[in-house]
Every structure is written in structure tokens, then in C-alpha cells.
Length: 186
Image (cartoon, rainbow, N blue to C red):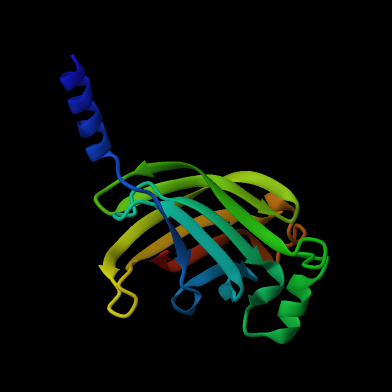
């Protein structure tokens, strides 16, 4: 009986994969967005300051993300617009200096694709969101000898649900997010 229990324990341990911490390599990552302007064009931008951490195994299966993005780091290549977006009319960066995301669920949808659900906190409001994900690949970095993973996350957020900006015909309600990540295993 002891041999059976010991064998079962060995098999169970062999099937478990070690979880580790992964951090975004911000020099090779981008948190971008796009929104419709005047119902005829799209304005793109990104956030320059962010901290993205994931817990995952060596194959980056079932990652668990925590994200912190500094709202004052918004950049749309137009200083006047960026200052307006930082103001109380939109992000109110002084009162709400960060937006955050924390994973609540993961669903594999294909060989390298998945759905990631989580709670997004923006402008003091927390709501669930779903992101489509793609694992582009995993390599061993030649310099650090550590694993690196490339991912792309996309999703749509209705800005009005988070109280960002008012109801106006000049801006679309939906913001398309595109997050390209290079994550380094710690």
C-alpha cells in the first residue's frame, strides 16, 4: 500500500509544472489603443509607463496577469490632446494615477490562442473584461539564458462604462486595445 501511495505521489509531482514570475520587457512591449474620431477616422495612442507581471509555467500556459498602467503616461503624438486626456474630462490622472487589470479566468481556444478574463479598474470603476490572446512563441534569450515569451492581447472597452469622457458624437464609445508583450522569466 505504501508503494502505491508513493508511486501516486511521484506521478502527481511529475505532472505538476513549476510556476514562475514573468515581467514585461518594456523596451520591447507596447500598451496601445485606438478610438474612432468624428466617426470617420481612428486616433491611436499608447501608455509609456506600465508594469505587467504574469505567473506561468515554462510553456506560459494559463498565465495569471497583474497589470498597472500609469494614466499620465498617455501619448497620442499630440501634446495638447494628451493634456486634455490627462484632465478631469477623461482619465483624471491626478485623482486616478493608474489603471489596473487582474486575471480572473483563462480559457485555451487553440494551440496558441486563449481568452483571458479579468477585472479592469479604470477611473475608479471596476468591471470585468475579456481579452483575446495569442502566444507568439517562447525562446531562451542568448544573453540572459532565461526564457522569454512573446504575446499579443487584444480587446474592446467601452469608455463610457468606466466614466472616461462624456457622451459625445465626436468620439466613439469603444476603445480597441492592442497589447504586444515580451515577457522575461525572472
